[in-house]
Image 1 (cartoon, rainbow, N blue to C red):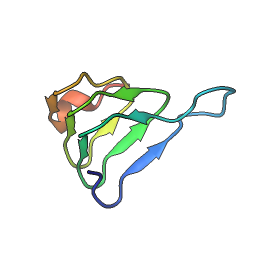
Image 2: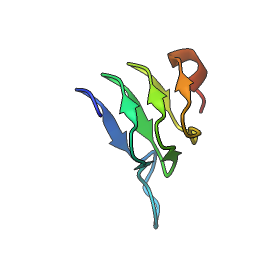
Image 3: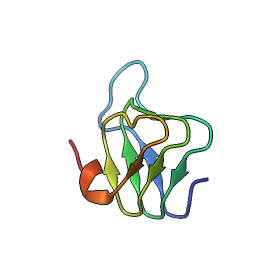
Image 4: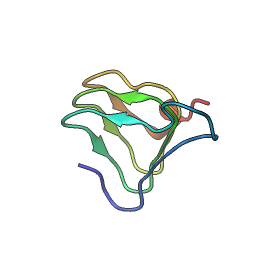
Length: 70
């Protein structure tokens, strides 16, 4: 489930994969930014207003501060 105002985008122009892969059962909170060629694992939860630029493991509950990792 992806709530409102979520951005799934790239971090820069490059050839090949640029956008995130979201697996089954993921919940992304309102206002979150998921950027780059990363994978969000099955059943992961991303809190509202988070900025995510690294892979998130399956079945992981992450707070905003833990995901602000560039």
